[in-house]
Image (cartoon, rainbow, N blue to C red; front, side, top):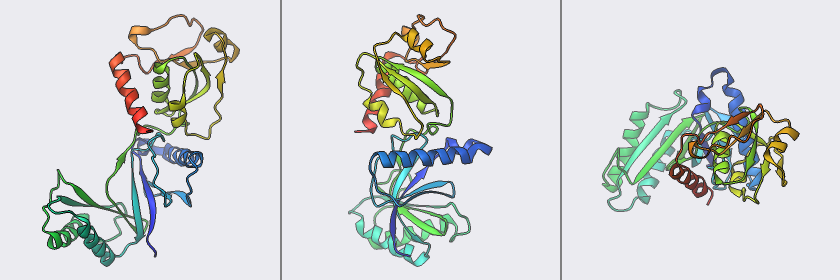
Amino acid sequence: MEEKKCIIVRYSEIALKGKNRARFENRLIENIKFYLDKEKVKYDKVIKLNSRILILTEIIINLKPVFGILNYSNATYLEYDYEILKEKAEKFADSLKNKETFRVSVQRIDKNIGKKSVDMERDFGEIIYEKTKNPVSLKEFDRNFEIELFGGNSYIFEGKIDCFGGLPIGTDLNTSSIISNKKDILANLLMMRRGVVPNPILIKENMDISLLKNFLNTPSKIDIIKENIDEKNFIIEKKLRSIIKGENLEGINENIKEDILILRPLINMTEKDIDEELVKYYGSVN
């Protein structure tokens, strides 16, 4: 089998959803495909395999804007062959700089493949050490030769890129949103991270919602409305039953008297907390 490239996508909370797990995984795959198409990324397939999602593509892309992903790795893969993995360990050794510390991490997701993980880690570690004499460090290391084994293949990579985790958009309720400031944007991001679809969205005060759009990665239809309309009239006109508000304890507005569920994910956050949280999201798409 010819060596190919892919992206290994890992998730955590979805795996805890029991009988609903398949629905959550399928939704995450749909959202990933939507994001790839939106970003015009060429890929062959997006498939689920052994509690992983694989994106078969040659292109390196930032997946942080897709909620539901715990982390991902840019990898190469080929059919499992122990001798070839030894050769890969030698190539890794050749790439080490003088005195760089290293470790080897092997995870057999499919327990029917190969030796025990600790035995492979020892074998590959010995190959690298004998060739370089570079020090091994299991906790504080400069480089990590990583292998995951599943589906009959070996996936080789260095490093895992952390994402926001949470749940895929579209796995929880649909609710509406009115956006007039940065707090409202953050409130929507936090609810989307819990699987909520904000629809419809009313944009006020000529707000820039480009950050929100970066994370609105779902095939679900979302109406974005830009009108000079009063909040109360908007709620009545659209017959809304729930709404996301970016209010904390310091700024709760009780003007909305309608029989409606108000979701306030920022309720216990300070102004400093809100600014720090927004920086995380802005930084992830730059």
